[in-house]
Length: 132
Image (cartoon, rainbow, N blue to C red; front, side):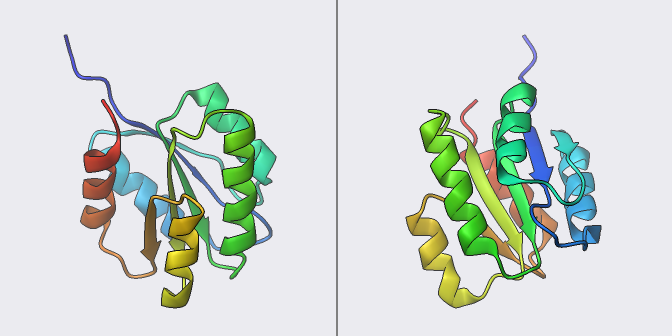
């Protein structure tokens, strides 16, 4: 039997209109054999969670360039817990100051990838951390 592909949802929450990085990461993930759903710009956190449920993804990745990563991730993690789907691998990338990384990890974000992170590192992290 063929191994199931990892399914990931990449989203751009909030008003941030910079999505080139998210599109390039989505391409790198597809090249690595993952199925990727890119939601597009200006998504709300509840919409991201609903799409993750509908698409039955293993990974929820947020691309945040606006500096609002802590409140957005806090809201996302709360909704995932409320809906009892906290088993999703949650990643965030973008403009993430080093001082915020421990805060994000404490709230349950598994992978934090500041701007400039090599795509291979993101793909490898997902492959090592998604239960198959």
